[in-house]
View 1 (cartoon, rainbow, N blue to C red):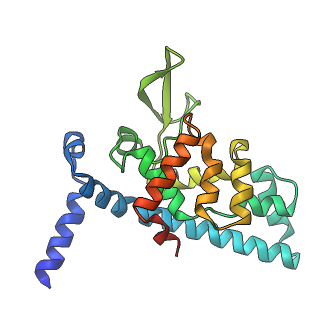
View 2 (view 1 turned 120 degrees about the vertical axis):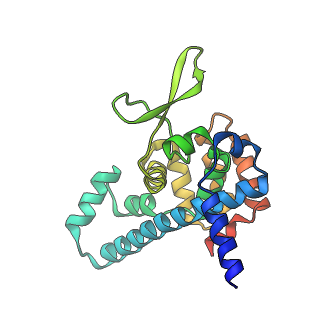
Length: 217
């Protein structure tokens, strides 16, 4: 038993002590183990927070309590009605967040994951905020900047809030509110990437192959 515990501890510590070159040479099995170790607990924590907020808000609306709190949330999320607020607040399943995280961060090995805690490839348009330049250019000569987060939790919270507020994901939010079917939901994430339907198809394949829906149970 002592040998097993020591081995597990050594493995966990070794996940954090990787150079850029060693990450690139890491086997896919090890990359995935490292990703799950680093990202799953963070996504789970944020999801639980958001689910708790959603349930409490639903109770407040149904009981006509905490009207000031509801009004504040409506302003924060840019909505006018109780229904619109609930549609915005309901968090989507962890399997989708994990699949997008895996795709956007190359299983937690990307430059932006390592240097900026940016799990989801979130761009930055504000030159006054912490950010990291991408290697590729946009429209020929414009530098692409990615947002730098203080922690992985900050990155996950920002991602969920972006999905909850941005007009590009309005249809996704509607489907998310009406069903728990992950495959139906991801079809409406085509605006997340320039590849559109190709992105959602790849996302679905990643969820199925890696059995990520087990994190939704």
